[in-house]
Length: 274
Image (cartoon, rainbow, N blue to C red; front, side):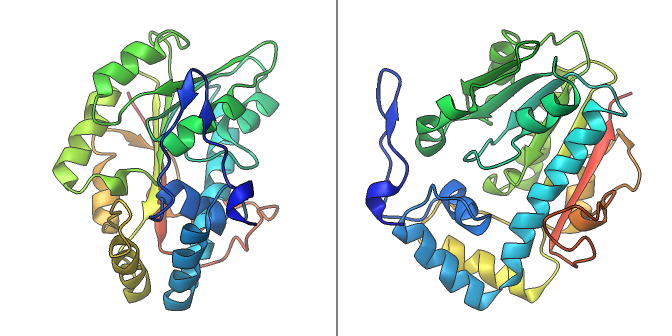
């Protein structure tokens, strides 16, 4: 794909300023999961990192599979009808609203991001079944109260919500700040809500080297954390079985696009607010 077929920067009311001189996490991840919304600079660093740590492609693909399994569980067995997806990234196949509304056509989904690349594609997410609703918010993770206030235009925050933060919290350099942001978001959601988090983890030398190479590229840094730190986000919540595990081990499905038995440097979990 040439740069001329990379993401169109047009957005309602103007044009987003998209920097194509540096790699970008959403475009980089899009490249790893087989998407087309990326530039040469993203593919170059992606190929470099594949040489350093080929397993990062498995992290990307299996994390996407994890999202699908979790949303199917929450919309199905758990009966959740509202999803707040923060750190949307670029749309590919089987986005949160598509998975949820296949199970529950009346599900409501709010996507949140504040990145110009994602904003340029926000309109692509604004599709929904007739019974449900999908919205996109240009909001910042560092303003949890602002997110909740804006999300209340689509979601009923007196009813349970699934708060989903996948492969996003690594952008918050300080762990305690990341914990605080998650806690403030959960504080605005009622009993019966769920927290879903997954992220790359510092569980091998390969992913640590890959993270260092990515951060040295000029992109906005992304930090991998220890498994115990991922678990810390769920303190005070009721963990859904099997708890904090590799994303491939969370209720694996033979139909996943990647081998469910893969060992990957990515952990995730689902927790319920009592």
